[in-house]
Length: 160
Image (cartoon, rainbow, N blue to C red; front, top):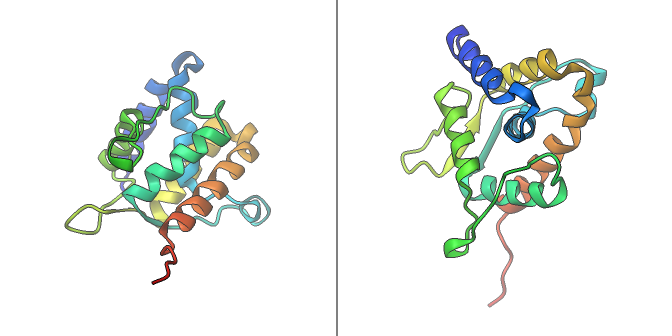
């Protein structure tokens, strides 16, 4: 991740966060989900973690996050067309994450989303600088997001 991308992400966050709108609350908690924050991060300072998950699992995880933390994800709505949740708001935020070189799609069919350790560090730094006083609020979102994606990624057992 380069300085230009970090600056563009900050400008975007500034634009999103004017007047503490629903967009700000949604965007900062969207970033928090991908940040990799955990309890140990606060004790041992920042230990960013990379992320890799299928796009389908990411959408399912955010749908669950919206249900568990409705105040953290205002304006995030899903439709279940075709059995998989879809959200225009989430799609827009995922696009912004990619546009600022914070995420990658390492595969030709774009089935998996990746966040490098460097991008995770940049997200954490941005959240610390912008919302340092409420950093502990991001931990449950980040931990739950990664737990949900992991659960959705594990193969489903079946019997013959």
